[in-house]
Length: 270
Image (cartoon, rainbow, N blue to C red; front, side, top):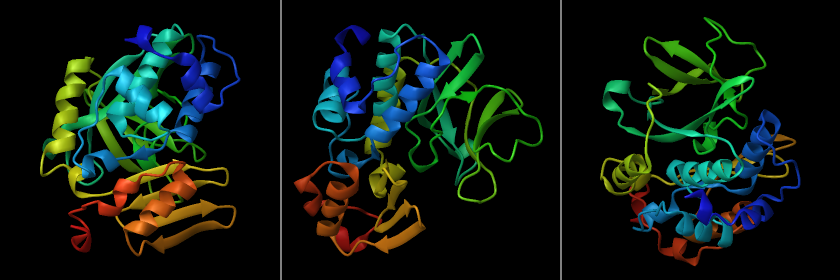
């Protein structure tokens, strides 16, 4: 798949001028740049268009059209980039446990792991507002993690848990995974469920996140939060036109179709 990658166009999208070595510095720098340049969004799902995971479609959307996407799109594109550069990423799936127990959560989150001289790292650029911006060492720190660490991996029997501590709030379990290897066909199956099943949160709610020069912007349905030098500023979108304006201002693209967007979680927008 990596053979079909237009690496130059991807690096231009990221404004990347750093090294392209097979090492931790390059991996960490590319992950930060990828997340800064390519936002998280599920607009296509709400527009009734199941995201495609073939590399030409991903390049057209995330690179050429300067759009964003959700985990399957981010991970598939980023894995192809890493493979082109000589890394050997392994594809995995996880159960998101932020709001439900693992027994009720399907394996619908995609992420990677990469083994380097320094050890094995989890690479998760597509988890939205709680995505780690750096590779996370696959090491269990025990009962506590250092106060300056926002993301870390913890053992739970035969599974690994991504723990997240953000915005001064207590740590939460984000997802759990046995770190089984996944294949592109596995992602296709999970992507179909995520984009089409009536119980999927991506079918029912609007979820956006972008990194900006001054901080970040998140949107859940109509509730937007803009983090800047003065801290967070919360606003509530008045209508779909306000959503389109938010995309143009903070996410770097204009999508006229959002003015007819149907969102089950917003009754007045259905």
